[in-house]
Amino acid sequence: MRNPRWRARKRKVAKRLFPLFAPLIFSPMASPISTSAAKKSAKSTNKTVVAGYKIMQFDEVAYNLYNEMGLGQTGLKYEIFSKALTGYYNMKHEGRLSDKPVLTMVDFTRSSKQKRLWVVDIEKKEMLHHTYVAHGRNSGEEFAENFSNDDKSYMSSIGFYVTQATYQGKHGLSLKLEGLDEGFNTNALDRCVVIHGAEYASPAFIKQSGRLGRSLGCPALPMEEHEDIIKTVMGSTAMYIHANKDTYTSHYLDHTTAMAELINDNPNNTKLPPSTDVSI
Image 1 (cartoon, helix red, strand yellow):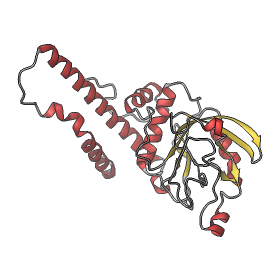
Image 2 (tube, rainbow, N blue to C red; image 1 turned 180 degrees about the horizontal axis):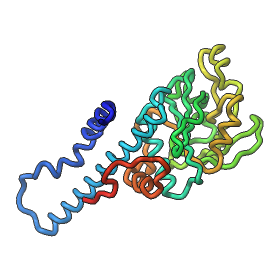
Image 3 (tube, rainbow, N blue to C red; image 1 turned 60 degrees about the horizontal axis):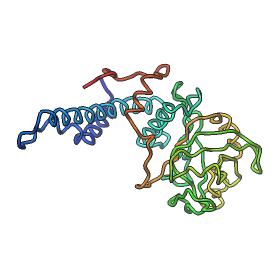
Image 4 (cartoon, rainbow, N blue to C red; image 1 turned 120 degrees about the vertical axis):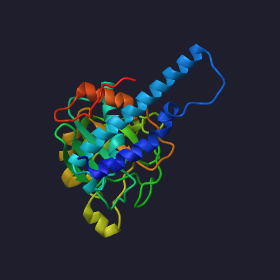
């Protein structure tokens, strides 16, 4: 028997996708059209339905993985994990990632007093790290509310990243980040937006100031954890920084591509839903 929460989740997804399937359920009462036009319309409808089905398939895989890793109990919203996982497989499809099945997620909708960074192993279905992370000083006080891709904005940048090489900087071991979303984070390398450790990214600072300290735009981590996390995620792994930003878009949120790559990759112990290779 399926988990009741999954059934409820599936109903929500089906409701969201109803407009995609409606053309197959309700036949339009319109004047006759040509055969070629009818075929073209049917082909377009079929593509839409297939895309909708792929979203439902991917959603089931993502939700099962989310539950198996117990991410809900740590405060990570499923919607954020689903977006991050979609981007992970799209980036993998483009050949941007190494063989390390590691995914890093940051939720900037949470208070800086809360742990809001997660690192997971997709293949082993394990959460590897969960800790605090700072946002840029011009992004907000306790909460990150403003974001920018501009140099010297001292704001955080949202979207998908791929980790690059490490180096020794003024904060010790640091990790370069390449932003992949045009208009949102593609200036990360030029801005020197990197993962590094900071004394102000600690529970002690929160106790003293009532919030986490802030960076110049870098996702700064606690000093006692940053080296371990950097060594885990270094070397072309995926990272997703989430925020409440209605204008945010990314071609890495393509569920059809993500599902195709998941089928092609088929990580160990990842159970795919039935009828994966459906065609309509």
